[in-house]
Image (cartoon, rainbow, N blue to C red):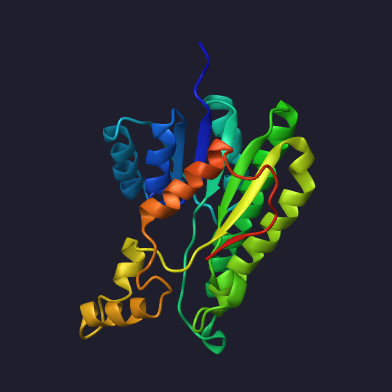
Length: 246
């Protein structure tokens, strides 16, 4: 009996990672959620199982290159060859550049960009050894394409994710390894909703923000998760170095 294909998902306690894990588990994949928060990770993994899916979890500090490498090696050796990777881990800090400290900058770079680099480096190395290809989906942001006021460091890290993903797509297309990067605008997650909680009128503040969106609303987690499933299934282009931009 063949083992189910394995999907490694970083930022596993987040809404997008969870929504994607449920979708991927629904098509028969064994999902592995990785995050630094054990409590939130437990809840996310249980949600996947409650939905009928297979889910493992790993508590890991993705700001550490050594931990990123060890995560891929451990999942590959203990659970099975990784068929798909979703890099969805990210942190943000709204501040102007003159307000940043070295530690603030290093935190965003290590989680948002360096973890993507090291996870991709390790996963691609094992995929090449296996010789069966694979797919990597990196979660960027529209801020990595056009920049967003008040988020210079976040925008810079997401721009790095976009450039890295495009380069990897070019480097490994002939090895059957597809690399995609998504650059969505705002998504209706817990973090997005928290942005308005401190406003005098949260409902009005959110409505005014969303009035400026093309569709008059932000994207839902379900919409992003369905696109990620589509790409992992291989129903998209076999080679596409360009980011999926909204």
